[in-house]
Image 1 (cartoon, helix red, strand yellow):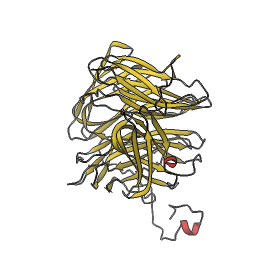
Image 2: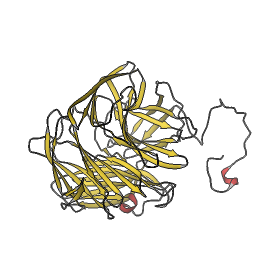
Image 3: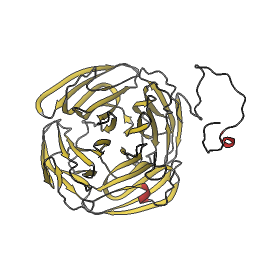
Image 4: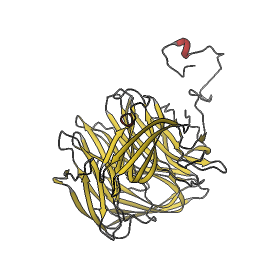
Length: 495
């Protein structure tokens, strides 16, 4: 007994024969298991399990998601939670990584902000990684280096640490690996209370040709405690030009504060492999929200748009999240509702959806349980050209149970840009916001393994692992293998 708390000792505990135990005895935390985790995910469904977080000694590693023979590998999201003392101070959602040999990510090292990489090498051979860091404030500045990741090993470091030792700058890191690796990029921000806020940065594949279509950030927020940094990232070897424009929820052009001026649009010029950041400050009492459209000049490629939005209360930045919309017409994202809205520990999930086409987008949403069965709860939206919506699940589906884990399926008549949102109220009644990366629904999947390049447990941390089946009409069967940074089996207790 002892794994439930119904305020009744007769219900919560049962009489058993005592077993001798000492410090070397295997642990069994309320049905938790160690080393591996098998999964069976139905069409439209998913599964979720979390590390125990018990103990004061930090445990770090990586996880390999492998499909059974004849099955397809699911998509994955990990949510890191960090407590300092007894207070939850940060959560961030990180997508599982497909193996890659080249990549690019945004880098910011400046005072309280830092950027880190977690790199997992799941192969049986050592991997050499060559990298180039560019400084967007100095087009003549390049920092080059090379590191080696041992076979079946993982390395997670901030870029100010060895082996990188990068100075303060804002720009990009491009890397090339001698064999496929899995990579996660994280942004860390130390707030005014000395608390460490973590958010996720996209790792892009520069070998994939950049789009020529406009791209959208489905959500920004400014004033009323909110600020947003809009970052444009040029993944190509040629200069990109175009226009950045701001719209309200109805698709109307609006003016917003950018730096020290107020504008409705900005022209940009982006040198190769460089970035440009636009700061939307918290300057008023009334919250202003909307979407951002990035339109390339005819014939140019489109930069990747990244939004970093944060919330400040009482002079302290309490929450920060990075967003990058996923474009498509059929998408899925994990949602979780728990507790009474606004109460300590409560969780509310939601979505932000922007119209990414030139016609009105008619959008249907439906919720599914983790076993793949429909709840029967649906919602229909009409989003005008340039418009967007951002709502929590209990607003879209008023009858959704207050305790729920499942999947929202988004189906649109034309292209939309989507992000998943997750809000949580901590022990100080701070509202923490993070993003949960959505996945695109596909007809043909892959059996190739995907990897969580980094997980962390204990020492204040927990990791929630979420696997979603994004392949229509297929069941996904397989195993998650937990490994230490040196590649040995790690007895990570999850439940």
